[in-house]
Length: 237
Image 1 (cartoon, rainbow, N blue to C red):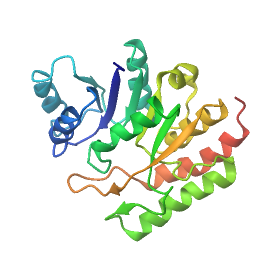
Image 2 (image 1 turned 45 degrees about the vertical axis):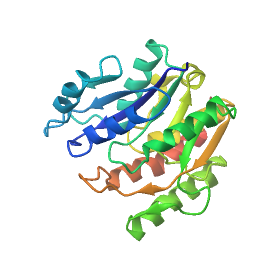
Image 3 (image 1 turned 135 degrees about the vertical axis):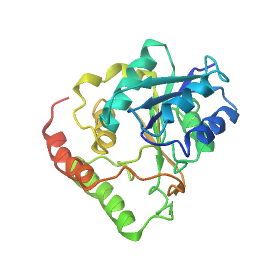
Image 4 (image 1 turned 120 degrees about the vertical axis):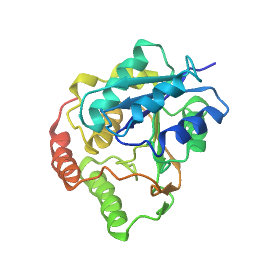
């Protein structure tokens, strides 16, 4: 059976972390979970370590000191997964904005339908976002439109953070060469896979705004992504 790892970066997710872990482990398909916690002062890491006693060999944690950025968290997780021979590696938020049930659909898009990288897409079938402020929807939607225009990549949701990578994608990429740390990281990873001739597939999902905890979004995240996309266009692969 395929080895499947769901990477969940966390910072102050004590209100969500136990529920999201239990939900993933309730799914068919024998998913494992790696939490990467950036020194959450609210006890997120302690809650995970307590649950590890209940789920030995299935739940794992990497603890880091301080907020080091979403991109560096995922890169650390990707390297950890490659060292342990996982076949499929997923990115997913801790706050239930991504429905864990869709993990199976993302996996099947790769394992059964031939994608190398599958993307849980909010925009490939219109706009499928629930309870977001209209300003944030507009910003997110047009960010992906901007990326398509600049990079020529025919992906509707280029900033999506709910994805499944086949092992060969991560093995082929120069993970140490990934430069963006915020949400621009999501664009950079997809564009790198695209330029390396991997098959990208969008799986329509419904994205629901978090009900518990606090969003980690900031204006600096969007600034990095805007300028980073222009630099990506000039990069040689």
